[in-house]
Image 1 (cartoon, rainbow, N blue to C red):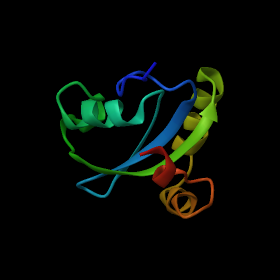
Image 2: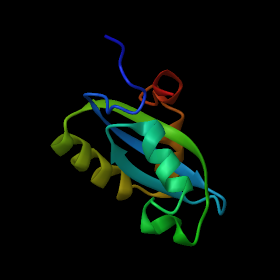
Image 3: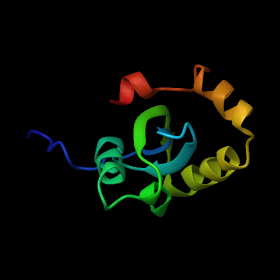
Image 4: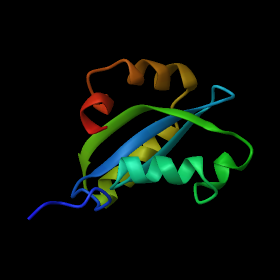
Length: 98
C-alpha cells in the first residue's frame, strides 16, 4: 500500500523557520511540509500574522510529542547566537526531512 503524502510521520520534529525580518520561529510538528504550508497561509501560528516565513532552517527528528515539546522549550530559551550555531550542527537534519 502506498503512503499518502499528507499523512503525518510517526516521529515528532522540532523545527526553526527563518522569517522575512530575520527572526527565528521554533515549533514542533509531525508533518513538516504540511506545517510549513500552514505557516505560509492564514492557518499558521499567530507569530506569522506580522511576519512572513521564508524557509525552514532547522529540523531535528526522532521525538515523541512530550520530548519534542521539551526540546522546543529549550531551543526557545536559547539566545539568537546559540540558535544560529545550532543550525550549523550535525543535529540539523533539514536536508533529509524535506
